[in-house]
Length: 169
Image 1 (cartoon, rainbow, N blue to C red):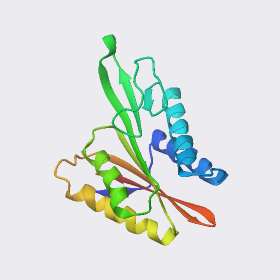
Image 2: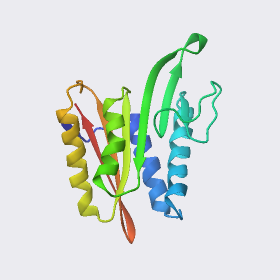
Image 3: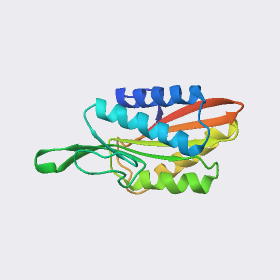
Image 4: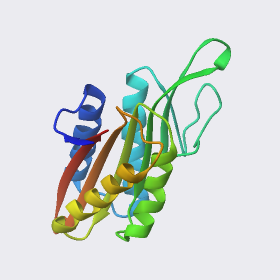
């Protein structure tokens, strides 16, 4: 398992879009922040040719929120799911158990990209959480070579500090 600096084009677009949202710092609640994150990620998925599913969205296949905070599906003929390009979870509680509860959904899911977004009070806490989630991946028996996890962390220390880690197994 390696910590990569080479994000693929999808991961790079997601990271930069979420970073731009964080820099705006104009949300008044976690609910508004979550809605902005989901809207941004779903718009990106749609632009890339996938069928985004998330709370508050209706798709042409009639699917709103589906298993995760956001999912990008690809459908073949007769509405058969042929690919899951992305699964995303977000957690705004800084408590490790709450973050881990959402992350474990990604751990057991299958998708080309897995994205976890979370927040901490201070930036020095982000790497510890990244390390813990990476350890979860390392010890999961169903981890496969090439699994990709994009971890995005925010620290609210007056100014929002943004950090990311890509883990490729």
